[in-house]
Length: 295
Image 1 (cartoon, rainbow, N blue to C red):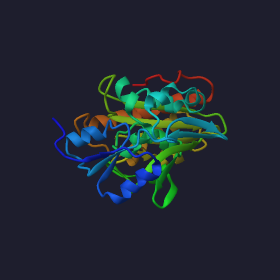
Image 2: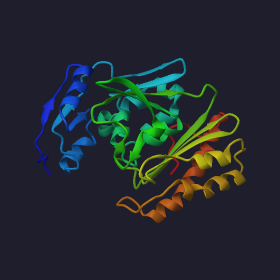
Image 3: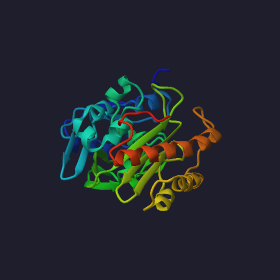
Image 4: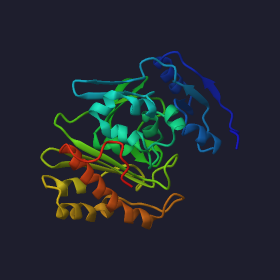
């Protein structure tokens, strides 16, 4: 189906010009990778007055690590994330997640920041950034500000970002101590498929855990009840069972075209256990190589 809605197209020369256009033109939409936006235009889910193409703007690209903080520019693609030795060395969970995203062609265009700006419940970056307590950086006419990722998602395809601001990147303060992590994604097939369900796990020394789910609620969700019940506990079968028993309290899956509610409810405890065991093993210098699929 062709795109029937008419709109203007502009390609600003600077970030300042871009945010000025957003402030002056109600209904403006930012275009970066466009892998979600183009589909939404075709389906008439969005009808912008103007597309503001930011792909050529300086300062929004790249991955850096300094003083324990990993910075990811808003134009950084999933392919760049996967191929980054910095990511592989310091935050391999991002590498593991990135490998599961869609297809090679999509990963070459889709951006990590665009993934959370689209804010679909099944976005792959959402759970991973949640367990890393990422910070979103945005700029508007009033200047720059930061938004904790826990406050970012407010509903299906909805974030706290107002229409006159642009996300310039995300930062993650990585744990100073050694940690292990795992990303478990359930799909109908290997290839260009969205998650039926997902779980991200970080295991820290001292038996502290960070856990987040995707595709099983209106937004990606941090599993604080499960984290609390596991706090300080060795991951024996009793601890695993206690964590699995709390999954219904942390999630609210629905039936859609990708999976039934019942299937998601049955698979989530299995995915959580596999993610926990892999994260703990990796924390302890063992376990499967990052990039391994668990389902």
